[in-house]
Length: 108
Image 1: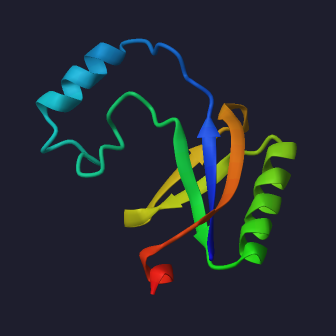
Image 2 (image 1 turned 180 degrees about the horizontal axis):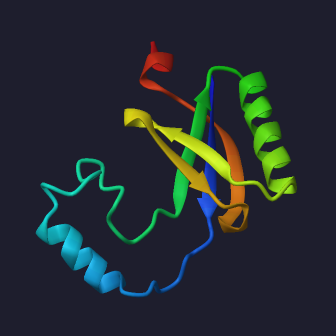
């Protein structure tokens, strides 16, 4: 069984000029950097997958890393597909969840 570690973020609330940014990103979506992934489109994500681990020990190690960073008030670095990295400020983390997940490979 695999384990998923997910980070839930606090609600950012209304953002200044959010409507303008959304209109601008929709108008030039094909040419905007990051447009294929939608990373530059408001509103912000409310949850991010930190990682999926093959065993419980790997998930526990990830939780320990997250806990250490949050206790030091350091940002969390999340590596995403396409060589993208997100730095999430510790103050934006609402809670962290670790749960068993079933992948298609696990069904065989």
